[in-house]
Length: 327
Image 1 (tube, rainbow, N blue to C red):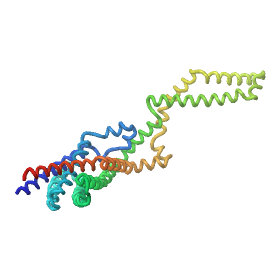
Image 2: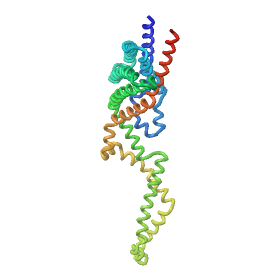
Image 3: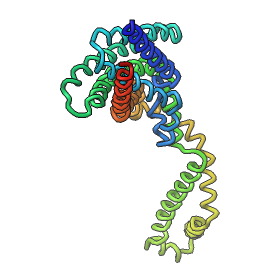
Image 4: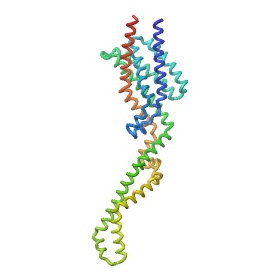
């Protein structure tokens, strides 16, 4: 009787942890994150994607994996599967009722079950192989494999969602690229000033080369009215190019024509003229899915698996203490 109650208790804990993880995963927006756009304003853009749900998910799911791994040190394989499946299956069914029965939900349900099975089996194997820090290293190793299975599901899910919304995401990407290319606000003013300086300097060089040439010097002594008009025009142009007023006029003209330049240069034009930009736009959904999955694997291996090991070590100590107290 006591063993049955213990099994029900463990299954209930697994049920609560998995259902809470599903709710947090849905609320965190992890499946539709756009890391490429967020990375434009690094690190603020990346930090803006981190929310409370994502942080709690990063704690609760490793806790679930650590709990299951810790149980393998005190329970037999059959009891473990009764606990895990008894907790996971109801949590998955309730998740279907809450979030619907779509491709993403079914895919993650399958891979979560695969991840749980991997944790159980790897924990049984590793606990016999390892000699030091057995509980921590067992859960950590099992967690890494479980996270790898979930990464596959995350990649497929985020790719499917990204493909469905690729046109919208590419439009947003195109708008940002055009804004960066043409500039805006203070950036636009700086660009206009730099363009004006470049234009004026090039004109100074052209006019100066004419004015300093021997042929032009000979023209100064000519009495022909047309020749004198040309000489006066060159001298006047040199004086104008050296004046601050001329620079301000050029900057003003460039700023006035900036909106016209922006409207004439659109993302479709860039796609036609640049095969690389076109390839990025076409496969943006795939690149974005790869970015999300890579970030997930990095943080899950660095933090998630070690948290699972830590939780497993603590839970095993607590269970052993409770067992000794009961005796």
